[in-house]
Length: 158
Length: 478
Image (cartoon, rainbow over all chains, first blue to last red):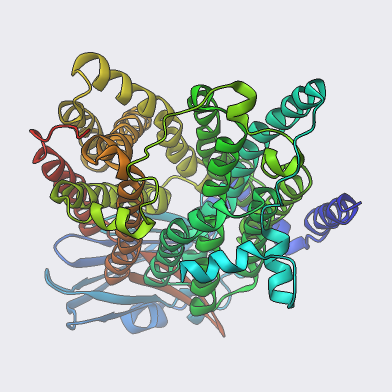
């Protein structure tokens, strides 16, 4: 007698899980496997935070999606919130065919504690829909894709 | 307090709603024993088969409602729902609740209809899991998870009471062994099953973290229904003789301390210095045990880059190897060291600490990691069986062995709970957020450094074995 409601709730849950998927959800769930098909065309961000406290960020972005002037100002691309201020900021931009290749470097020091690093490419270049990101810190490395269509980062990208 | 409870249990089912509820959970009145011996045998065979299957299956299913949080820790942290410090606090409340449950529920279970008592614990644990799926407030989750710890503490004493009611002295060890496999059934279901639900496709279903609580809740409701429907009260309440009479398997009665109060017995344990040292050793080892069970899969995802499913698979290797570790410790210490535990403790401690060093500082190779996890699980379970059980029983006078176990158990879970908070705090202190704002929204990627927690986890094992080795010359008491 008490089994019926249990079975009913299991069946309802299955329906909710199985049939309630939106198109964007479907894209976000499957994109990790399909990303490599357009990998060469999208914006790439590589950030390396070394044990010596140096941050080097490399941004490869299509010229049609970004303006040189905006890229040339570090504050438009990367902001660091740390216990002690970072120094020796430098920006270097080169052109590679249809892409800009920008390099940003900062020295935050050995004994510093980084709280937050904001990367502003999606905020300042609204034409960019998707960014592939690789970040390495002294402890770990993360590789993921950010898409405006998805609420959360896509990990385990092929 | 005990006399008040005794009064309540001795006159259940009358008066207020409260006493009716107590009456519902209290063990039934003893019935006159039926004269039909065929009927008695038939009933014993039927119920004994049910009891071992039900307590093993349902205690295993109950584990899913206890460990679900460990699997969804990383998705919760990634989604920014909780910080690692909050995750640590929530995890710790379960262990404190469980420590309290170990203390209180053992007493209650002795007076209870274990089928209803165990079922209520499992059902309420399911409700706590259900609530966890809706909570994004740290204090609400901590409260729910702490209460869940107490409900989780209904299972073990109920199972032990059922075992002692339905299986005689000479056969209880065998059935206790079968019941013990419930730990691995439960951990397997959680670290593989729940992880499969949450892990991203193609390895898992990629469901939201909430399903990591709701699915265990459904499983535990199902378990509670089975227990409520099929786990029987004690034989004497069903008009059957005691199992000792039925099997003609009576143990010795300690007449000298038969009338000694529980409090006196427990207080006597506190006067034994070796028990204090052993409690500290066990507590330290529980730090490592629960660090790996609680944070291991988060570490493997954060630092080693495994996905959720693979990370939990590695944790499962260590829990599965634990079955062999428990069995091997008793065998090795009995056969090779004439039942002396300290030499075996040292061997198993080396088997536990060496693979820990390989896991955290060794080569980044999946096969090496898998082997290290298996050896670690083997060594850890062996030494835990000793520090929290065998060695404690050796050191304590046999008449206070139960109290010694309880004392060490409480210490152990306080250590485990403190570990969860301290680990979470240390991990949170190392946090770096990489934020990718876009309009009103923000993608936040969290980075943590596990160097300090790892030193804490490995260090706890080293402290544990130093403490345990200080008891090298302690001899078993009578």
